[in-house]
Structures are given as C-alpha cells and as structure tokens.
Image: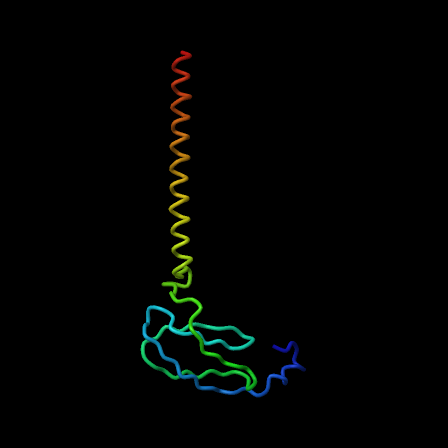
Length: 120
C-alpha cells in the first residue's frame, strides 16, 4: 500500500463489495478471503452466505482454499492439525527424556548413598 497521505489517492475510492461464500462445516476453515496488500482471513461456515467487504476500488479480493484447516478452540491456543501433532510428539519426547534424566539422577543418588554407607 502507498505510504503517506499524498499517496493515499492512488488506492482509488472506498468501495463496498459483496462476496458469496460457502462451506461445509463450522468446525474447520472452508475458505480463505485474501485482500491484496492487507492480509487474509479464514472462514468456517456451513451453507452459503453473502459478505460485504469495504476496500479501495483497486484492491483485489481473492477467494481460495484455506491455508490452515483447523481452527483454534480459543485465540490463545494453537489449533492447527500438523503443528498440533508435532507439538504433542515433541511434548511426549520431552516427557520421556525428563523421566530418563530423573531415573539416572535417582540411580546416581543411590550409588552415592551406598558409597557413603560402605565408607562408614
């Protein structure tokens, strides 16, 4: 997008546009709406709807397949399928490594304790 007030006129006039959208589920993202130069957002919906978007006249709006299928159950928690699976695998691996370390530390403590009993 143009930077500065004097270049804002290059974008054209502010215009309302209607976009027809449709989807098959409220639980996953069915489509993305990309607004050139501004960003994109995903929709999860079942059925058909008409959205009204306001952009500058020269800005392209594109409908596409969703880049991310799964939606987060809350804004603070990631909900993506692949990263979620990877995160769980890493979490399980980290948990196993922590258990192994604790077991080694416990064994070392037992050996040190046994060594002091022998010395006494």
